[in-house]
Structure formats: structure tokens, C-alpha cells
Length: 90
Image 1 (cartoon, one colour):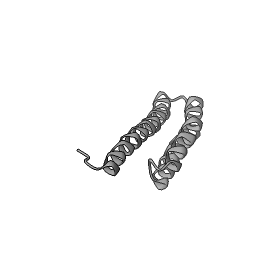
Image 2: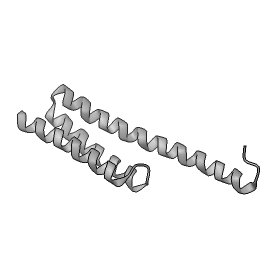
Image 3: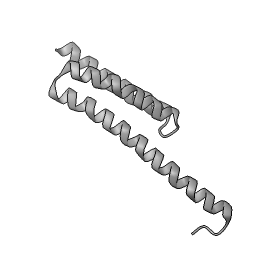
Image 4: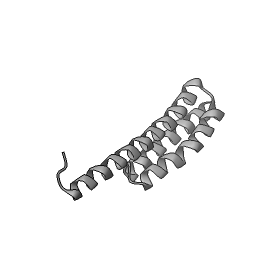
């Protein structure tokens, strides 16, 4: 347990940041899951809409520092590639 005033403050800050990061990561996972579900259904239009909703969520999470910017770029790129591949096949 924290004994010094500064350590207590650091502990409070860590809790707030941890919760904020968890919320942001959950948003990203949910957005990615929506795109994956639409792809699994085979609905190209639904997948495209879900992708357009997911991209800003992923990018914003990276800008806040919760995930690395290259991780967000990779996620966006892979999702876009899958949606485009599905559209080309349809």
C-alpha cells in the first residue's frame, strides 16, 4: 500500500488511467467484432458500414496512447483488406 502522499496520488492516477484504457480497448474490440460479424454473414454493405464506424474508434484509441499507432494502422489495414476482398468476391 502507498505510504507517501505522492505514492497515493500516483495510485489514484493509475486506477483512473487503467479504467480509461480498458474502456478504450473494449470499444476497439467491439468495433472490430462488428466488422468481423458482418464479414462472416457475407453482407458486404453491412461490413463496409461497420468498417467506417470502426476506423475512427481505432484511430482515436491510438491517438490517446492506449494502443500504439502502428498497431492501430495494422488493425485498420487488415480489416480494410478483408472488406475489400469480400466486396471483390461478391
